[in-house]
Amino acid sequence: MRILVLGAGGIGGYFGGRLVEKGEDVTFLVRPKRKQILEKNGLIIHSVKGDFSFTPALITKDDQVEPFDIVLFSTKAYHLKEAINDLKPFIGEKTVIIPLLNGISHLTPLKEAFGDKKVIGGLCFIETTLNQAGEVVHSSTFDRLVFGELDHQKTDRIQQIASTFSGTKADFVLSQQISQDMWHKYLRITILSGITTLMRAPIGPIRESDGGRDFIKKLYTEVTEVMKAYKALIAENIAEEQLNSIDDLSYDFKTSMQRDMEKGSFVEGDHLQGYLLTLAKQFGIETPYLKAIYQNLKVYEEML
Image (cartoon, rainbow, N blue to C red; front, side, top):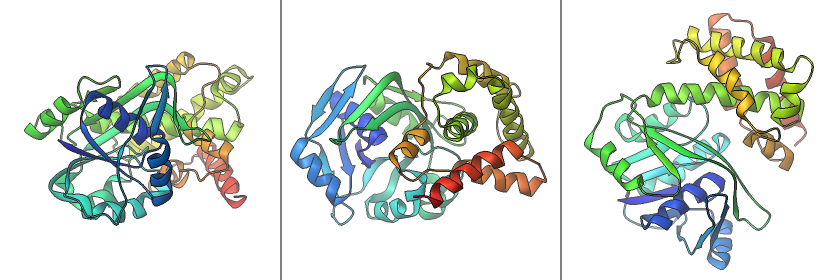
């Protein structure tokens, strides 16, 4: 299958690179400046699972090529509209789009732009960034990409995609409950990105500080109450499970939003915490901890 990866950053560059390493037909849709860098230096991955470098197949939004079979949609939420427009010329009748954005609200504009049948569920767990040379740095063993039909059916196309993704050094997983997986990831990333950006610290000092665990627990209570009011597909005990799993994270663990903030980059506060606050208002639920986190992000954006 012909695969198009939207972007060649920490997420797209890593997962797309692992597919190239296996021998799959992968092309990267990038901006002209990034294209020049990659043409000169190649795409380089530094990883605890093994380094890999190669000369990638590249296109920009103005190139004319045949539609692709699979698209890994790995942009940040604040680039969603622009990315949708860039992608339109490369989408065919049978193209399958796998969004890897955090959160859930991006599904609506993607379906509106490309049709319900072309969009399936997707998410990833990975700790990557680009260094100053534009190389992908994968700093932990987490590299899981989860995908599946949103109606949880075992279709021929999803089985074919699973076969294409198999046999790489990354962990590509076909899920039979991708909608729930996405909501659970949304819950986790909302909490972790929220507290690490608010406290300007990795998870270790936060959970070990006086009152730190209680703060995290109360934030979980707020967010799960909103999700349950929305009738999101979350497990009954998911907050307790995720709260306990925070101890499994390394002392120095940082979220991608925290890393973006440290770089002075844009953040996804509107897409993550902001969307949940919209739902909270809709259902008349008070969320003071979530509001404080969102306000912190808005103040940060004002100072960019």
